[in-house]
Length: 229
Image (tube, one colour):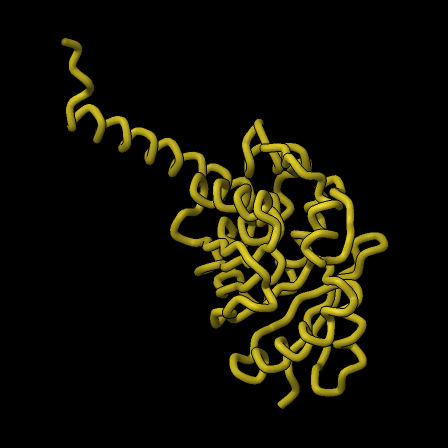
C-alpha cells in the first residue's frame, strides 16, 4: 500500500510556497517603488505578467455580452495602460492610505496601491471573472492588504476608507444612484475621491465638492475631489 505524504512534508511544501509568494511580492514591491519613483521603467506588458501571471483565464462569455446582461455600460477590453494607474496613485495624498475601489475590474489599482504601501485596499466588482482574477493576484502578491468582493457595487456595503476610487464606467442611468451613494459616503467618511470621465465632470460642477488636483494621461484626465467643509 502506497502511503501519501506525511504532515511534515505537507507543511514544508506549504511553507515553501508561502516563502516563494512572499519573495515574489517583495521583489515586485521593490520594483514598483523604483518604477513609480522614476528610477526604472517597467513596460505595461511586463507589469501585467508579474501581477497576473502568464496564463490569464479567458471568460466563457464575452465581456460586452456580460455587461449588457448585467445592466452595466458596454465597454471593450482595452490594452492595459499603467500610466493611468500611476496617475491615480499620484493623486492620493499619501501612499499608506486605505482605499475603496468601486468597480475595481481586475484590480490593477488595488494591487499597485497595496504593493506601494497602502494599508488596505478593498475592491467591489460585478463581473465574476474579473473579481476572480483580482483575488488570485492578491492571494499571490498581497494577501493581507487586498480584499475583493464580487457583486453589484451599488448594492454592496462600502467599507470606510481614506480614498474612494471610481475608474470604471457605470451605465448612464446608474449615475444618479452612484452620486447619491457617493455623497452619503463622503459626508460620513470624508475620503479623497479619484475618478475619470462622466463622474469627474459631474463632480467638477457640483459645488459640494472641491477639486484637489488632476492629471492628464493623453486623452484621459483623472481628478481628485474632496467634500467642501
